[in-house]
Structures are given as C-alpha cells and as structure tokens.
Length: 274
Image (cartoon, rainbow, N blue to C red; front, side, top):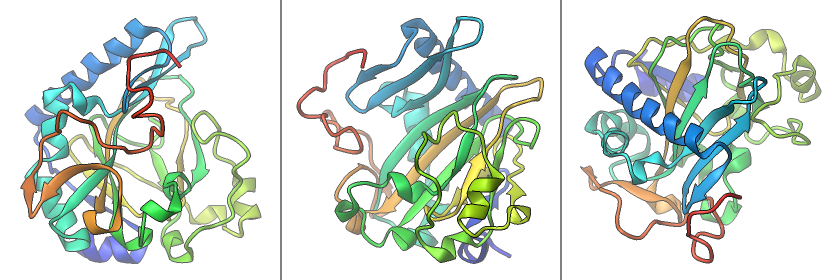
C-alpha cells in the first residue's frame, strides 16, 4: 500500500528512509543547538512565533520539552521544512500551494516525563473559521531523528479514528505532561486494544490526520528521542501560517512573521519571558 492509500485508510502513514544518515546527523546537531538555547534561557521564552517550552526537571535543571518555529533563526531547520521531499509526500494529498502552521521540535530525555495524553490535533486548530476543510486539507508530519519505539516514548495511534471527526476526548487537562489513560479512550467509546505503536528509524517520516487520536508515553530507553514536526495545510483552506511551497516551489520565510497561533504577535512581538 502506498502512503496516500495508507493515510486515507488508517489516518496515518510512514514513508521510510526519506532523509539519509548524514542528513539526520546534521538535523540532529541543529536540534541540539536549539536545545542548548532553551537550556540557557532556563524557563519559557518567546520572541514572536518562536517559543521555547522549558520546565524545571526533577534535579532542578531546565527541561526543554519543545520549541516552536525554530526555523526563523536556524537555517538547517528552515531548509528541511521546505525540502522538496516533503512536497512529494504532500502533493497527492493537499496539492502544490502549501502553507505551514506547525514547525516544532520535540525532545524526550531518558527517564524524563514527556507524556502526551490521548488527543486529536484538531483540538488546537483555532479559531475554527480560519482552518477550513480541516480533515482533508491539513497533514501533520514527524521526522524521526532517533529510533522511535515503545521504550523511547514513541507515539501511539488509534487507526482509522480520523473517520469519526471530532471525538469527545477529555479536555480538562493539558495534553503535554499528562499520561495517556485507557479510561479516557473508554469514555470516548474507543477500545484501548486498538492502539498501535508508531515505530520509526532515523530518517523516516510519519504523517497523520488532524482527527487521528494519538498520544505518547515516557521515554524509558537509554537514549533521547528527538522528533521534528512540521504541519502543512492547503493554502486555499487556511487564512494563517507561513508559506512552505507556492506552485510547488519552496518559499523562504519573510522579514515579517505571519500570524499562526500566537494571537498577540502584532501587539507584542518582542523577546520576553511569559
């Protein structure tokens, strides 16, 4: 089954070996540099759309959990998000005019709490009016930098759950930092036994639908788990986001950042600690 058929049937797909070992090493080094920036800040920091999510670890050291829009100041990561191989994956699904509303790095250090509760990404596509035809126009992608296994806290999916649209999952807690709960699935009418692990090797790219139910657990392996997430949308169906490809050609970031999720971008674009 090709990735397009797999994506439409199951709500997710895997394209193996998209980036080479040397390329993955370079991307990993860029991620490590951004991680060091987050550690240096020591707490959450924002500069426009660029945002470092930093929490104290159990030993008191800063724990960098994710960074949003690092591509504004990291050329390696910017080149990856608009690499033609992503267009080849996306074009059969959402066309050649593509915007981007997610540009995000995720880390799970060995033994650290990096859980994501069961959720649908559609929960975060707000306001509704600017994300039209969400189920058919938006594709989330994740590039594995390290091995992704159950032990390293890889994502888990509920196959074909995207066919049900918005599902009444518990939204009373934050997704990041909350453990996956079988009770949450049962309460939403989902059999927990249906869940599958997303197993990836470095260089593999996964893609999933915004209505696919998914989550991830703690990293109990001996290595870190890095993931580079880029979320793309058919340009005609979204009023927000940075351009990634226009008529199939990669589009660099401009001098003026586009409105994505940070609602105060125009009022307070300056560097600050929230």
